[in-house]
Image (cartoon, rainbow, N blue to C red; front, side, top):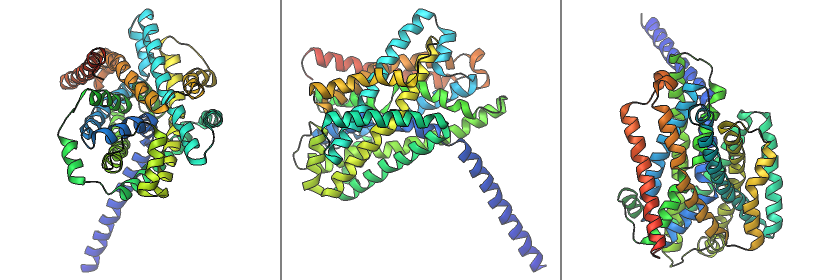
Amino acid sequence: MIILERQEQLSLVRSLISIKTMKMRQLLKYLGPAFIISVAYIDPGNFATNISGGSKFNYNLLWVILWSNIMAIFLQSLSAKLGIATGYNLPQMCGKVFSRKTNWFFLIVAELAAMATDLAEFLGGTLGLYLLFDIPMAYAGLITVILTFFIVYVGKYGQRTVEIIISFLVAVISISYAVELFLAKPDWSSAGLHMLIPSLPNGEAVLIAVGMLGATVMPHVIYLHSQLVQCRNGDSTEKGKKKHLRMERIDIAIAMNISFIVNAAMVIVSAAVFFKNGIMVETIEQAHKSLSPLLGTLSSGAFGIALLASGLSSSAVGTMAGQTIMQGFVGLNISDNVTRIVTMVPGMLIILLGINPMQALVLSQVVLSFVLPLAIIPMLIITKRKDLMGGLVNRQFTNVLGWIITGVIVSLNMVLLYLTFVGKV
């Protein structure tokens, strides 16, 4: 009897392990799209705004990172749901729902967003090469162009290949900032307090806060996420779609919380190192050079590696988003290489004209924040329609929350405009 009971117990344990293994394998099949998306949330634009915010305002703006991430998770879930429910991406659905004139307007605005995004990606990769290997900026820019085209080419081997490469680069960025956090020895109690309690010390803090929002919640990946889920759209039944959405939400929760930790780490390290020592960082080069005497060469090296990995990985995401935007709204069919050249021109011009890359990065993120509502509003209009979404149509609470988030973003932008025109920013 005892032997039989033990055999039954062992059989039960094996069954439970087998079920868990099957569930894990199932989940692994769905993991990936959100990791591609997460790169946009830790791109070089985040470096610029987070370092600037931490060095000037200590831990005061950490709450912006938390709430931006919560909004990002909500919006990316909505984008993924649209793609799963309809079988089309957001720009394609806009093409079906809105007039051609409206779609041309959406296309132009979305392309401006893509240019602002690529500006951050291009400058990030260039600065990373310059800081790590002391390559002159113009040459570093050309190398970035070549590496970017290589990443685009690798993407032709399939989305899964891109997901693996980008997940590896996200791991490099995460490990680099884990090293930074360990060396910086921040005031964790103060960081925790400011994570929960909102504060905006002055007008410049509003500019940085809006920049952080623009750097964290990205319009181009709201368009892209609805496309990336398509390759896993197998079961077209309502039950199959709901299962896919559940799995994708887990994917989003894991990937987006990794990006949240990295963004928070950027602000915390900047506050603990620069603000504490009275250094107001105006350039990324200054941030890199200041880290070495304060924390050692390991810290400055980790910073350079993280910046380079961020710039190169987000380049691939920018290209994918550019293609989704171009083809979706009005059915344009332009090659990846042409899209890439068009969107990289502003970055190369900034390098050749000698404009401060850090200021350009911060302003590019503010531009993205202004464009953001024009990605969110069409998505909210489409996802509330049962004739388009079927059983995955938004609940009333989701609709209300979506409009509140849009209202918050628009309100922040209006405050920023007011402060800019009265000369307080």
